[in-house]
Image (cartoon, rainbow, N blue to C red; front, side, top):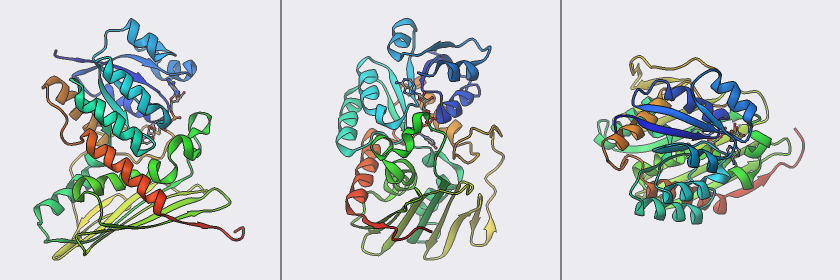
Length: 332
Ligand SMILES: NC(=O)c1ccc[n+]([C@@H]2O[C@H](COP(=O)([O-])OP(=O)(O)OC[C@H]3O[C@@H](n4cnc5c(N)ncnc54)[C@H](O)[C@@H]3O)[C@@H](O)[C@H]2O)c1
């Protein structure tokens, strides 16, 4: 195989991002897309030679595909992934892997048994500033990590199909949908924490915040905040990592190490406004290129394994269970 033939399911906000990125991956051919909203699919596809379906069962029946990319609402991930893996496709699935740990285990079990590849699109693991931070932690270049603070702030998502994202039982809410980006990053490096304290602050005007403190090895304190604000605040993801001999910071898109800005080189980033809360970053292209490369080289994607993605869903579950829920007492 010299080209991977892809079918994409769900061409809303994130599916649109994947859709445009396939045009930059020479070893991938987007053969067909499927969305229950045919008009949305038609608008994105335009005059490209890509088939359009509204039922993915028909798409896989009619088209010869090697890989399926699942960009549907999160409540559909588990069953779709299991079905497509059992049918013998390579599957790339948007985060979160599933909405709860039980389903995540079910998907991981099938994925581990499957001959073909499965990967959850944990894009943060592929983003330049975060891979840089991972390297500083793992090489102990600045000594041992002492403290890590991560934040992910967004206005409440309003773009989603039938508003599924704001329904906690369909999206997992601010913990499993938003904060999971940072929780997964931390979990993929440090594993599961020894101790968790969490606060959930749900306000009457639909703001939703989760603040989690996680303790590792008795003395590494990691805090992650994920917030959906009911105000048109620009999307921002940031971190501050303090080590024995210095710090690394991502602040307003700038990566700084010990006071000096780090140049991560030129990025192949589209300036297209996707209408969703994603920063302009080449992480999506890097992640998709990695998955396609693994297929072509007949290798399992070991940078994001099914078990580690399932652990991130389990961590999100644990946080939701443990969180002290604060309710707003008065309107602000
Ligand atoms: N990695 C990231 O940075 C990031 C950012 C946003 C969303 N996401 C994830 O991407 C996924 C999709 O989110 P979104 O923001 O694109 O949502 P969205 O609502 O914009 O898009 C979902 C699309 O799926 C379609 N759809 C619904 N049911 C379908 C079905 N049965 N078959 C085919 N199509 C169907 C909808 O019509 C819609 O176009 C979610 O899992 C979300 O968590 C990831």
